[in-house]
Image 1 (cartoon, rainbow, N blue to C red):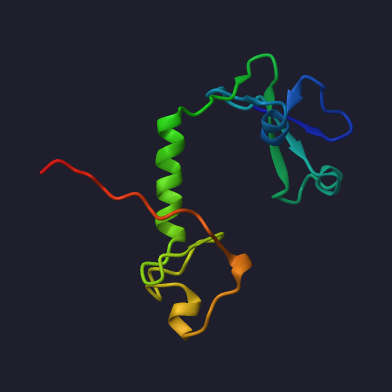
Image 2: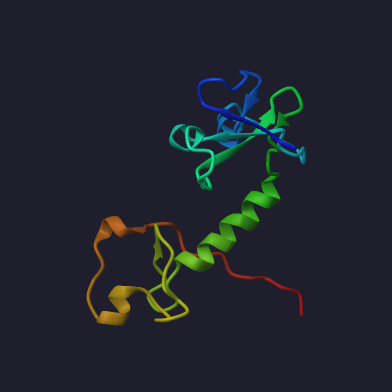
Length: 131
């Protein structure tokens, strides 16, 4: 059975996921030890509460893992694939509707995009795979 608290009587050594992340920590696979209920639902226990947060012990939390340079490069390539238009080769600051339109909105509708919506990065690197 998990303990329940409201925000006024929760112990200081129990933190939510967001509080852990703000402190540079992660639960590292440990299960939550308590629930934090919203103020409104704590006074009406018969109503099913959907506003709750899991609380984790701060002493069991460990520092967040730092991604390697190769992992960051892989993430950047994946993001670039979702943000680059295959027609005009511009990389935008947001994901493109490639599944539905197949290209960016300016290419799809036939107008010039605003300069503040895409990056002016250098040309994409060519793949040099051994055949």
